[in-house]
Image (tube, one colour):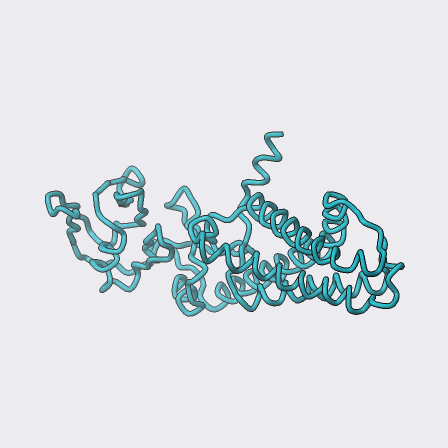
Length: 291
């Protein structure tokens, strides 16, 4: 059971693009229409006269319902649908809620035709079971293909970046003999350091952790200050990049970069963790990380 819970907690890419949501919605609706019209499973063989009208109506409702589920909740619950926090479990839950909601609407849609055409009446639960059977095929296929496509595209981009701009050895990095100070929000506390010793910064609530290079490895200093203010203070240093909403990194210490369907990760021999890169990061900015 533990491995299953861990698997559900794994990161998963939630594509925020409206174009993607329209595409998967259209694919879902078109598949259901064609599948029902061609194979006519369940009770559909009884309604030869209105088969096109009935199955097309189901396909259109599936299309509109899928787009609604993918688009509207993400607008309302922005924090829940945050790309960086999206997981396999959340994606499965969204699919289950979406298919159930569409199934309920389709069941009421089918009731319109049952009495006039003397069709077999089936329970809502049975109809939902049929809906899941039909929807599972296109949704699983499309999600798998999309995940694979995005992963391959990012892996290819990473390969190109490495080819053009090989990571340099840390010993060959330029030194900026500059000592700077960052004040806290209330201006009562200050952190002072040499800019070339700053490896990366990460935010922890209202506090920021500065990780500085020292003879014994990384030394952490904490200050009550926002990452936005720090980024403003460091904007004159081109090697200080805010690559993520929670991270600022010194590009001089980046050794490698990897990418998959869920995003890019920056790697360094000095940093014990992989630093995530925001999906909003431009290709040009991403290439500059390995200068």
